[in-house]
Image (cartoon, rainbow, N blue to C red; front, side):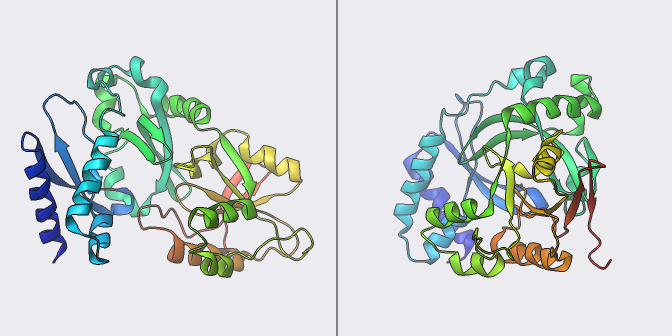
Length: 312
């Protein structure tokens, strides 16, 4: 069965179980021009309906899962999400009612040039800072509405205004944390029952306090661990950490959700760090969550971030 045939079968089966609902599938362009197929169940009494992406269900089907069991899983997911997100579209028309929910995030500029043309944004190195209104946020993801150029007209604001709102709101709503890499790795391996241990250990060596030759690594993200790479823009966040350890920092973009921070100590190999980023992106990061293959440097005296030229 092809994916299109699978999709049609799923839609027809759900229509059979929900005869009074409209069931459609939309093509949705995500970060880095990744296109996903989102199933939406529409009801005239509801103002907002979540999209349920079908690609993972198709993979489960190819591995032998029964189609009717998958339909039940989709309906269960729909019922779990139904009513959880409370959003009044009318409030979106008034900037004064949503200004406290305007946040920002980082995406790669080059990979998203077509999308960015329609968005208020600002360049930062090889990234774009873009803005969204947060609707709901939990460990499963973020319900959000991306802010587009046309919104600025009826809100009567500009990009500078959005940046001001987002700087305050994102720092408050998603405070940052910097934790040791070893703690994060152990957490990931526990969550996945050790599934990626060989890959992770090959890319990033295990740290021990006794091994002075292993350069310590840290993970910088936010407490939600969603769109956490933007924490590099938080005023004072990098500076406070760098001053605490009395070192400048290399920054490795692990994904849109987190950064790897490496103190600049004797022995830090720029090309090795670059290879870590490339290998991690190829092996462990989805196309949608990829942020950059570059390595960055934070100078604590200048309080500046720059792209590392690995050939120098």
